[in-house]
Length: 101
View 1 (cartoon, rainbow, N blue to C red):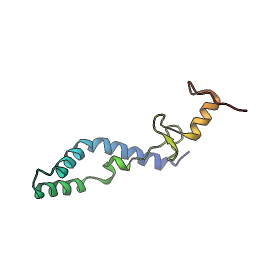
View 2 (view 1 turned 120 degrees about the horizontal axis):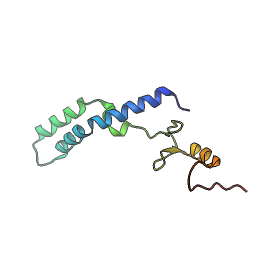
View 3 (view 1 turned 180 degrees about the vertical axis):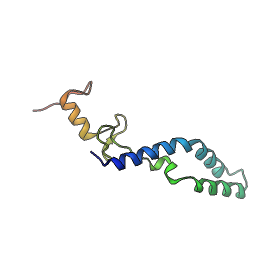
View 4 (view 1 turned 90 degrees about the horizontal axis):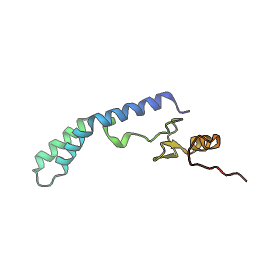
């Protein structure tokens, strides 16, 4: 199991990223629009930098839903390779056949 504090910190980041997603995308669109003046684009960049750092979706870490492990996580399953192996051994993952020879 991962540290509870790390898991909770990541949850806070997910919540902030979801909360600021619209505002952040609007400001990025203005900042990257070459048809606008440099001043408008620069002010958009300044406003973007004033937003909380943890509101960027890049700061959110993919973690295992079962154990909270931060590495080797399958995106589609939202589960780490270790948790998948354990659940597969118990026969809890539908369609997964674990071979042993």
